[in-house]
Image (cartoon, rainbow, N blue to C red; front, side, top):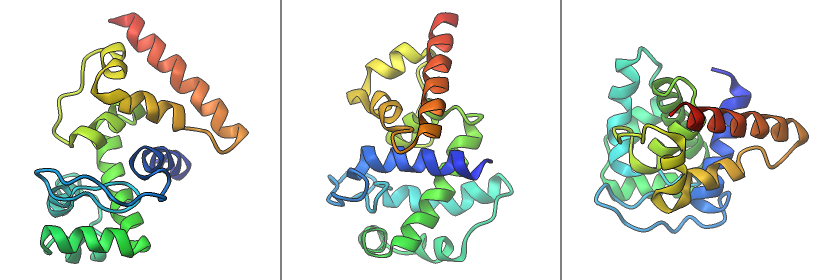
Length: 166
């Protein structure tokens, strides 16, 4: 996986979840109170080591330790330890991007709805539903630089082509 793509994916997710780290107060869900820049749910953090192992991916030691904690402790660590937050987010992103063949909008959808969420078959449905999360992701993807603008243009072409195929 390309590190630049991973960073851009995570940057766009952070914009959606916490305005790039400016707002770490997330609403509680049935999976715990999400934490950190990327709004990761504690239940997902607890199951992430096994998902990594199932894909023959490395499980970072910090994640292994964090996954054994209760929901509240996980949220606290994600909110206060930027290195752990970033490491765990990177691991989750790698799983989702691999599962979705590096299809960024589909991976963003699963970030928001959960790794086992069924992604709508066509991009139009994905972009119109669920509080515009994926559309916000697309809009946030690539903002910082000219190189990112090129990636964003390619992403929008991919979405249009995917919609046209359906």
